[in-house]
Length: 124
Image (cartoon, rainbow, N blue to C red; front, side, top):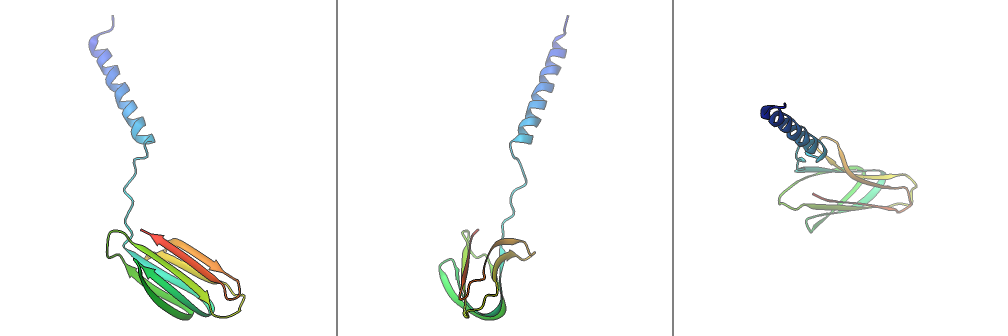
């Protein structure tokens, strides 16, 4: 004869295993870290003009060769975009990156077209 305590023990074990399986397959992970600092990098072997928009405020960023600009989150919703235009007919590649301060690329674009344009947008 099977005792009540053995049945209760088996029930507890089954419930515990079911709970572990649920937690494992439910996608429970650590919360995503909020990005509060972003770096814009532009790399091109010639002249370029960039239009940067952060939460609706627009500013120009002209340059030659390399440009770097840092941004810090001010509000809850954060939208940053940039459009960079090559100011010559060169075939060289123009690269645009939004990165974390640790160097992780969040978004990027490039162009090799003469007088080409690259655009990147982030919503964080």
